[in-house]
Each structure stands twice: as C-alpha cells, then as structure tokens.
Length: 108
Figure 1 (cartoon, rainbow, N blue to C red):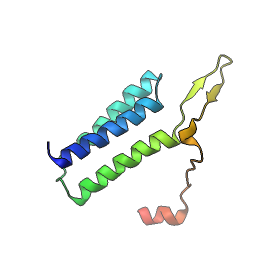
Figure 2: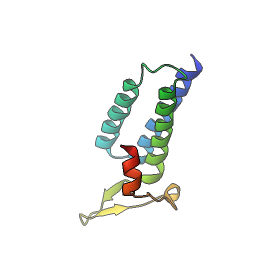
Figure 3: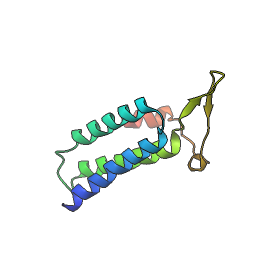
Figure 4: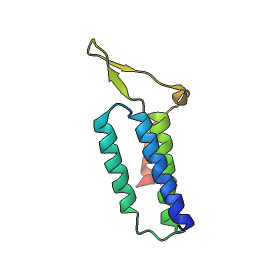
C-alpha cells in the first residue's frame, strides 16, 4: 500500500474512531456519521497523492477527528425527560471561537 493511501486510511479510521467514541450508545448518530464520513472520503478518492488538494483533505480529516472528539458532547435523556450533558476530561478547556464578520468575509 502506498504511503498516501496508508495516510488516507489512517485519517479515515481516526474520524470513524472519534465518531464511535463520541456517539457511543446512539445508534442513529453512529450510522449517520459513518455514512457521512464514508461519503466525504469517497468524494476525495480520486485526488492525486501528494497534491495540495489531497493534503488539504487529509488536514480536514484530522481536524474533523479532533473536533468530534473535543468539541462534541453527546447528551442523554434523563428519566425526568430533560437532557444531561456529561463532558469528559478531553472536553476540558475546549472553546469554539465564533467567527467574526471579518473572518467570514475572508472565506468567501
């Protein structure tokens, strides 16, 4: 297996692992996230190994795995009907910067 293919497979597995850990116990989210992850990787299957586009796709995959692991907390329904969120140690100190108009305008 070529190095680029191995790197892509490792990124794919990392995103799946992050989703499995984050959505453990939520069958719908597990199934839907696996389908979406697969679709996104299939969309990039034809990228030339070593190209800038392939490097960006791999970086995006690594960022997605990090985001899923550190920024998403799965809520569970309590017997009272409300939702309970139990952040773990990986979520400690995690913050999400809300993009300013200046940042958004640069993305266009």
